[in-house]
Image (cartoon, rainbow, N blue to C red; front, side, top):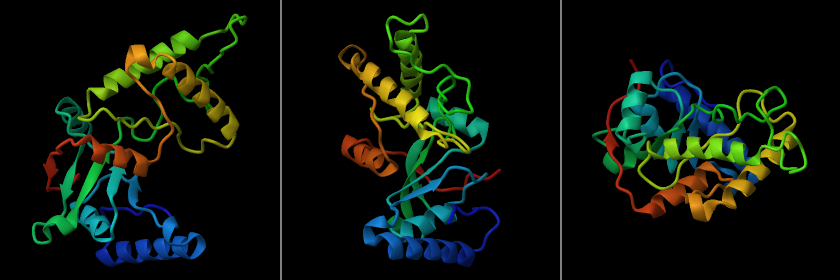
Length: 223
């Protein structure tokens, strides 16, 4: 069960596809296994009708990564990567859903891919090693975090860590992520940055608790 296209499908196809997937998850995991977040990270183009359908299905939020580069650049400048998407003038709030555009599609920051197929430097925290690089690795990551934070309204920002066909050797990823989080947070009093593992649902909860007022969007993300 995977995300469906948004540009070339009929309403009934989308509804049937979502119905099948949700029923299957509910049968296997029970009610708590039903997703509350739309995770449309790879389709090219997003429709307000799809946002409306997700809202009517009871989804709490909707995240994706692919938008026109000019729109993306403008939204970063105006801190409008996150907003309330109104999918229908007739349905009102029943068709509204919180929507977030991810900062790097669904990939990690440049230089921080820790997969076995990547060649980025791992975190070496043995001070006796000639390859010891904790400070420079953390410094570089904090530069990315602080720059990305300027694109968002709240004090919470998403950072995706993964890519196509990644985590086939998950231990390598998590070993480096554990180190990155640990050593960055040792400096949190100074940097005011706190890193943590999270999920879309937990991230959305933090945004709701931030009290930020979000802009509104009523049209599509199509050319």
